[in-house]
Length: 406
Image (cartoon, rainbow, N blue to C red):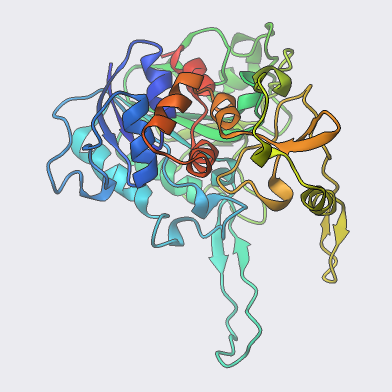
C-alpha cells in the first residue's frame, strides 16, 4: 500500500511500514535537524514538505494513497507537558489539520500514535476568582478526563471510520519501556479486520451484525494465550452505545481503557492484560567497544544523579519515589525522552564508574540501526540532536508488529 508520513520525525512509521513492503509517497516534518536525519536515513533529498497545515493549500498531497501515518505532537497530552490538550494553540490543534487531510483524501486506513496521556487528557479548568495583580500563579485543575479522546473518536466516526486502539509498551518487542497509544481507523465497510489487541488471531467482524453482547459473552473467541501475551477482559468493560450522545460520563477518571473498538459509533472499551514472557535486556543493545570519555560521569555528576534519583517529599506534601541508581541492564531501559537530563537520565555501571547512554544506543533502543546512526552523523547531525530525535521517535519494532497484521 502507498502511505504518507506526517510529523515524520526520523521515520519510525516509515521503517515499520517499509519492512512489510509498503511505499512512502509523501513525508512531512518541520524540525530541521530531524529533516537532515530523515533524508539521510531514507536516502532522500531534504526537499520534502515541512508544514502539515499547508499541505492542502499548497496542493502537496499525492492524488491517491492508502494509509495516513501520523504521530501528531504529544506534548499537549503528556504528563511531562502542561496537559492543555486541544487548548494548546501551537500543537494541540494540529490533529484537526490531520482531519482536514482525511476529509479531503479519505484514505483507507488512518494510523495514529501518541502518548498514553491522550486517553486521560481532559479540560483545563481555570479559577473564577483570579487576581491579576497577585504574584501567586493560579492552580489549574484538569476535569472531564478523557474528553480529548472522545473528540477524536467523534471526528473519525463523522468521517465514516471504524476505530480500534490499544496502549502498547515497546518493551514487548525491544529493550525499551515506552507506552504509547496506537490508533487504527478504517473506512466503514461490512467487515472490520481486528488488529488490536496485538497477537490475537486474525478476526473479521461484520459491522452490520455486530453484537456487543456476543462479544462480551465470548471473549475466548477474541483473546488467546500464546508465547508473548495473555489477553483477558477485566470486570470493568465499558459499553457505549453511541459516541454522538451524552452517554459517556467524564469526571476525575477517564472512561477509556487500554483497548477499545468503535464500530458504527458504538464502543466497547476494556482493559486487557498483555504481559510479555520474553524480557528484552538493555545489555544486548549496549555498545561493545570502548566508550568516549564524554559519556562517563565525573564524581560530581555521579553525586548529582544519586541525589536526583533519591526519594523526596515537598512542603506541599507531594512525594517523589526512589529511582534505581544505576539503571539495571538485565531489564528494558526506562522511557527515552527528548530531554533525558536530571532525574530522567539513564545511568549504567561502567567498570568501577558510571556512564550515560550514547547517542547510538538511543537509536538502537528505538529500533533504528547502526547504519541509520552513521548516516545521520555523516549528514552533520549532532549527537545531542540524535538523542532528542530518538526521544521523540516512534518505536520501529512496535510499528512492524502492528503493520504485520494489516
